[in-house]
Amino acid sequence: MKRRTGALRTLFAGAALLASLGFYAWASPAPCESDLSAQERQSVRAFAAMAMVLTHPRCLNCHIHGDAPLHGDEGKPHKELNIKRGPDGRGTPAMRCTNCHQSENATALHAPPGAPNWQLPPPSMRMAWQGLNTGDLCRTLKDPAKNGNMTLAQLYRHLDEHPLVLWAWNPGPGRSIPPLSHEQFMSRVREWIDTGAACAQ
Amino acid sequence: METTQFTVNGKSVEFQIDPQTPLLWALREQLGLTGTKFGCGMALCGACTVHVDGDAVRSCVMPLKAVAGKQVRTIEGLSSDRSHPVQRAWILEQVPQCGYCQSGQIMAAVVLLRANPHPSDEDINDAMTGNLCRCGTYQRISRAIHRAAKLSAGEAGKP
Image (cartoon, rainbow over all chains, first blue to last red; front, side, top):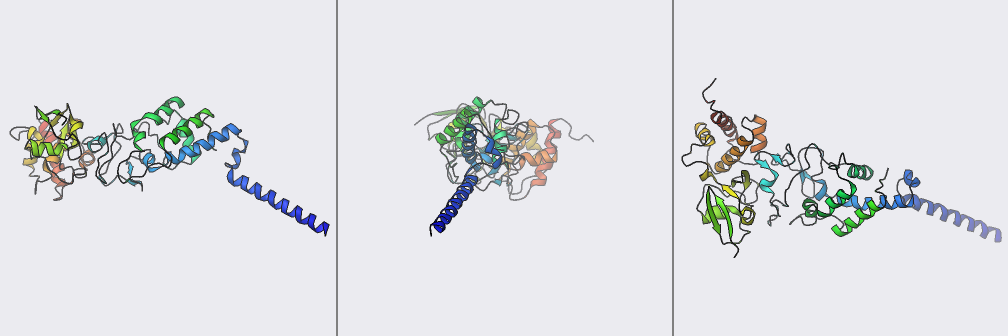
């Protein structure tokens, strides 16, 4: 009887160990990140939270690879008017972004949203992250060759102050806002930078 | 009520109306410049296109306060006698059918030709794509823009 109880105990302990290992594998970053330090893991986790905002349609609709911006929560191509990025990111002659997008939101539902100097990134610096996984998005965001020649300090300021970034939290009627508040987002940006701006593999 | 001052077709104007009022209402209702049309009211059709500091903006969604201190030009200010090359080209090509969208089309075409004096068909499509015409006069609009380009360059009639 004693031997049977011992065997059962061993069995339960083994199962618990396997379960906890399974949970660890599920809850941790990708296996190749197991080599990261605790600080780097914290940084990767902070960026994962940032990515929820950066991949929200309010951000993603303009950070695109092609020349036609997207719009709406569905990310539909802005092709009903054949809108194009143009040579400076501000549209084509007589179809400049600011012809319709004023410096503040129009109040009517489905009327154009607005913020000062509405534009796409220019074609020479597309700052595109459409379709990137979290690790590649992270590397793109901190690469000056792809982020508009910004240092991390400048990137922080851009995300904290730029009117087009701030617009994401005040997008006008009929448009959703990112899943974190701007304050929460900036606190994760601060954490990501302060812990070394590490990226997932 | 706040006063908003700007210039329309070279004349200084002042309004003491809600600064959120769309520019289009001030032009049509206050100044009687009815050449600029109301189409959709949401910047989607281009019928209300006027120039603000040289850009072709949709006056139906531009609040008065955004125009303060700026230069506005409407179709009435393009020329006093329809002699602007784009107006002449429009008449020569007999572009309008019902005519409702045409002042917006002309104002957009003027901006295009200033930025690009010799536009290709693709340039024209890119620039004029936001100005809708329910009569479907697009081919004539395109021909008129090419013709206006030649008129402006003094090339009309050359082989």
